[in-house]
Length: 328
Ligand SMILES: NC(=O)c1ccc[n+]([C@@H]2O[C@H](COP(=O)([O-])OP(=O)(O)OC[C@H]3O[C@@H](n4cnc5c(N)ncnc54)[C@H](O)[C@@H]3O)[C@@H](O)[C@H]2O)c1
View 1 (tube, rainbow, N blue to C red):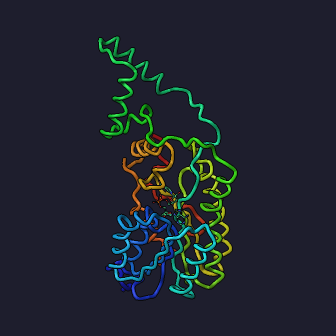
View 2: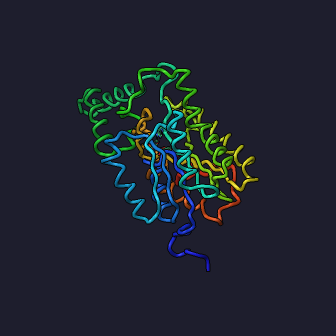
View 3: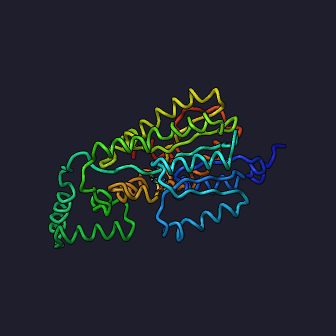
């Protein structure tokens, strides 16, 4: 009989660790909680306001400790040398040689800005004016402003997702356009930083003999969303890095994956312009008519950490209920 098969605590007592960058929220936090249940010790790097740590994050960290594993956390900027060094040294000190079974890069730190001023034609105004005229023909008088207010109320307050093409987003585009620096930093932080960490962990002998390296991508890797250019470029770099890591780190036993989550309600998601409209569209289009949750992704990452999931490497794994392939 396989050890611990019924408890789901496959790693308990083995002294292995999961190192999760961006582990205080969204996919990173959900994965930390799931893997703690499976018996992995957890080391998290994150950057949050102290107030948020006290009121929102601490109870989650307590839940991880309550699973009976070690938890080490560092609230630092992972993109300055001191913060980075602190987390890396902590991995060496707490996990030690050969004990990092999962490395996950789930940091959301990119610039979501337009590259040129928005010149979308006024399709919404046109549709509302046409609706006014159609109503008038039926003896109902309403101005375009009244209809717009009604549409926004029905969409934002009554969950009328089907109105997403007419409603106004409450997450507007930023006034500043994307700069060279925004592009460079985003491609680093959300693109090749995954490779830099994976390589350093391998070089220092910290990875387990069959470690899993995982980073997060999105459907914006292939399609263009307005205001997402820098992150989209980063995702393409990330996926190239994943393939290179799969090839060059395999001799050391490591497997590398990018997980493509469907649209998920997280703080980083809600910083993307029009994300409220995108969530509505995703609920309509998804074959299961719901958003992806961080827990859906955590469950998948738990599965790919297991010994039996070992022959996938260098690949993109969609965890989205079929959202990306749905054409409706
Ligand atoms: N939300 C979605 O719909 C969605 C879908 C697919 C992929 N993704 C990707 O998933 C990843 C995680 O996003 P999320 O939605 O879970 O976001 P989130 O906002 O829930 O979490 C982001 C994490 O990054 C950390 N972080 C941000 N800047 C940091 C810095 N400078 N130093 C250290 N830590 C920092 C935060 O502390 C937090 O732990 C991102 O790569 C994102 O592009 C998101």
